[in-house]
Length: 523
Image 1 (cartoon, rainbow, N blue to C red):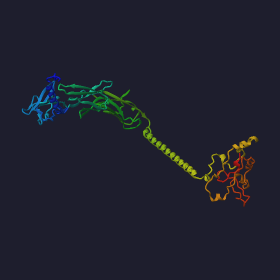
Image 2 (tube, helix red, strand yellow; image 1 turned 180 degrees about the vertical axis):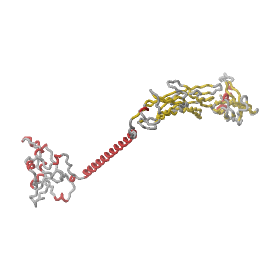
Image 3 (spheres, rainbow, N blue to C red; image 1 turned 60 degrees about the vertical axis):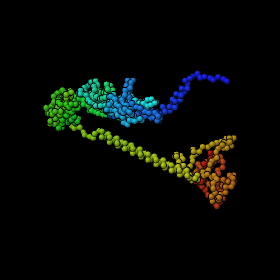
């Protein structure tokens, strides 16, 4: 009998039992979970709720305590504790600001009131259980701070001076103590530039400052400048109207270019655009003194009596305000007689343009209508010709004067002389002449049944036996030209047997005669 093998691991049975015990508890360990919100945010002075719940599917596991902690510089600071035996405990500095909403073995939710910037951080919710140990989860609390926004204009007076190019601040827009920082922009038609500055405060908030700079000018006066602040979903706007001071800009009115002798009641008025308004006006005449019959009333020159040549000259007006003095001038001419008055050139030009445009449009419409009518008429004519059978198609209208001749002349005939040896070969090359009427096979008619078309061409009698062409001497000359081939005639043999002396004259051009004059079949 073989000896029994002794175990080399006397403690293995104990270790195996522990492993089996732990394995039996593993499903319960994985099922125990602490649920919290990942992120919670709130504004300063408001209340926030930090949710925390525990899932415990194992009735044998008991909860002994719920603890809220804050992670600070790598350590944990207790905030609130719930113990079923000891009750609720809130630690400083959260006393009177933290409360458990419904403390139990499954719910550890708390409420944090009157948020402060120092409350921001990472919070841990922990459940102490027996015998499985502690279970915890953490969340981030973000504290927001609504900024204080305002816009103000510069207290420095804005003065426009010629030749000055330095840009100075004209307005400031500030968004103070915001968290996160605001976005500041400007809305204006002014040609300036904005500069921005961010200041981090000791409490963690940020102040954003924007200044708008430009070169003061006459064009910038009374222009609107708007500051726009965007924070989260909030929008703040404020605006101001610039007040730019500048020297007077002077113009003189009253001279219409038609000051003639003995004209009465004429005057010159000095007008200025200035900020502040001009306070004094001074009149003078270039290279001389003002006429004696002139009366000065502030910014107006009144000329008493009729106009004379002594009033001609260059008049200068100087306007002055607190910023400076500027001047303007006008050249006055005096004529013997009044100038002819007519309609203003601008009105005449406009009327002329309107009339010319109307004429052009009318001509274009007329031409278009005529063209369309011609096209329509041609289309209808072509359709009528296409619809007619070949026996009813009219001869095309004459295009040249020579085609209007009723008889051919000797000059119109081209006589071809053929050699005896080549005559027969050339005759075979010439194409057969097509009769005017299309005698192709078609349906029979009473008239066609009476005609005898059963004979061959050789049996058809010569048309000269029945027709006598009463033609001119020129036509008789053509008859002397040898025939290329015998002309065809489709007349029956005894059609005119009762009257052998019937004669037909050759039809004039354009007629619808059923036969072609024999001379047109010669070469």
